[in-house]
Image (spheres, rainbow, N blue to C red):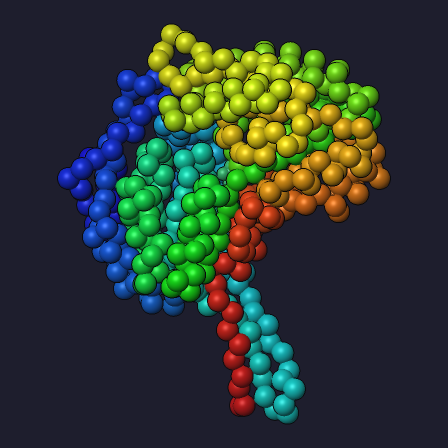
Length: 476
Ligand code: UN1
């Protein structure tokens, strides 16, 4: 087995394994990942529980040194890790290297946060009494991460978990075990005491579920689909765990008549199709006002059809393959549904290239209405739809008419409308003249409505989830 579990400081094999397939070149099997059983998860949780007490007492300097080591090594190896990422996930090499660098920067940020943990001291309402409000670690946290950001998302959950003094059990996505293992291997040499970080490979339905149900886990952070998120929240309620969910998006990008057309096309091209559209923040509903609609659709169609689709590792490729056969089927079936519902589908063909991979052309579906399934449900592929709006007010209403609320964008040169949109878009993140996807690593990430549940991730706001507040009263 190439990607083995790390439990209580030991690398452990399992009898069964799962192949890590390159979506750009299906015969290329990158490695074999452990396929764990619930007993492996039990030992990982027990290991985290045993190690949690000492790590909760570790000094800020000890924590800083561990996180800084991890961040430095990831940054130094970003080209190699980015290559592995692109090979197993299918995003282009520049995107893979960029994501690896982001993971390194996240560890560096949280290394700094180790030294900046503060509390409050207040005067009591009772004479002579002092009140201290501090943050304590939650304990053992279970992290369940998706395949689409196979190093950055584990990083933005592990780094704050460790920085705030928690022990970790990570269950990474089955489709992308390579990056998760590489990260675990770096962590294993970082000086972190054994057992504080554990990784268990396997299926969500078995070991992932077991982690979520486990009575000895105090909190669960999950990024993935809405149905799984809902089931996790319900399971966590049974054992009263803290829970943090990052789920889907159906992110609107409003393009107003006064927009800079080139900038709007570039923002939508990036937001909709980069990373093969496999981002919960993807710009998937392009809401365009009458005066610019036809020019915008024509320009975006030309730009989209100019994208070079191919093997993620080849130089000059602008869009890699879809992650696997199931996702490809889902994307193609959504295009069929959109056409059946009356949309005009441009592009979206299954592509046969020199190498056997899960390739498709990017697709735009024009002339859609907001009640069509293509505008209600997340596709998670290189597919964007276009909706016509009479004016800004109708565009805003359409943008907000969604079960999701992760990210919302607007392209305009009007300060007045940009400001109004920032205040009134029902989304956790709002972008003006920028793609809905592609976020900074040092500020909070998350949405409203069906997109997110629980405290925000990233930046110093991550403390909210990875700590519990303690209020102490002293009569000296
Ligand atoms: C980004 O847009 O830079 O799963 C990050 C996702 C998100 C991350 C998006 N949690 O796509």
